[in-house]
Image (cartoon, rainbow, N blue to C red; front, side):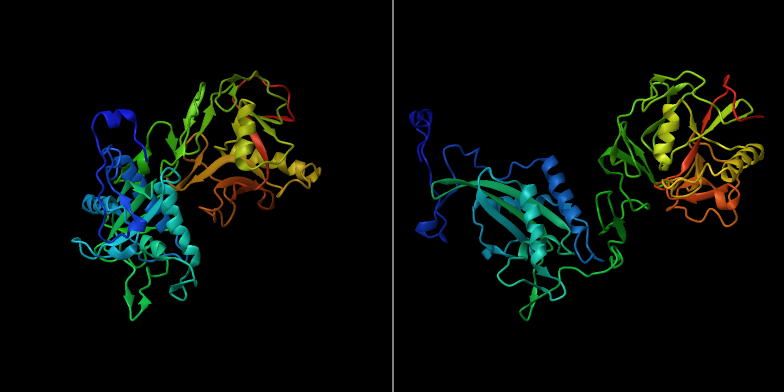
Length: 444
């Protein structure tokens, strides 16, 4: 291998460190003139967080589900051990569990420099699980699973990793090393101890780790020392209010765990944080409430106390119906009194008798109004955010909170209210504010 002339002129030379355990056919050069280039690990705090987050995400996704899988944390002492081992440029498993940090487990990978990354290597370790036969407690014949079993060893809760560039047989290689504590891959009488216990996540956490950590991208939960009574995390884009167990999201993010990036700007309206959408002021429409809509929007079907109600001729899901109403400068209908309920129910009954509702596109003969159930607030709210002061739920309703979060006027119940799946395709009723409307079918 030839080095740049500048290096030769400067009098720098190559120092070879030959590992005693290596044969002459497998020599590894651990140092070159550019010692900084070959320094162990260059991992920063960001890389530490990414490695730990990826380990925890993968540990939450084991099949069958794990009942006692512990959450991993970064350990700097283990990272130092990983650096020391990486500096040896030795990818063989001969050092398994042999370190001053007792009961340490290891995962290592050696590959040509520049072809892979820690993220890809960690994924490849986890993919070994496709060859692990959990019911038999062993790996498929002629397959390798020990990286997987160490990665998902339930009681391994501490992690430290490092990488190192190496020269091997004249080529530049990179070694990736992760140290785990307590280690895994133990055997009893030649049989592997099972890496975790199957069952509902967090159902077998110990008294020292009674918390259950679960992020939005996790499938199952991980046992942890509880840092808050809510047993939840708001991720990197939110802050947990431990008194209400709800996330306060950073600007531009929304969702229960602040996991949804939202860049909606409401020009003439109010931002609806839960839905990442705008509630437009009267007379404005569009996704960002920037479009001026002139009244009359179209023919009113019913005028009640200065408000214009129109019944759609097409069927849509709840949120598409809401969007259509908003594009017309209105909103899904809100019913705040028995008077409005009685008039709308009467009008819809007239549609029923004239067969104007029957259409093969409709999943039901019901109509959306602007009322939804908000699980974080544990209550029904109008799209304006108001709590209803009037209710007209049918007998036995609502009965599907958490599953049927959107409210419809139900034909079979004389158009009283019913909670329904929001993906159901119904016709819908739009409401427009007080203004001079065109003549309608009914004016009250």
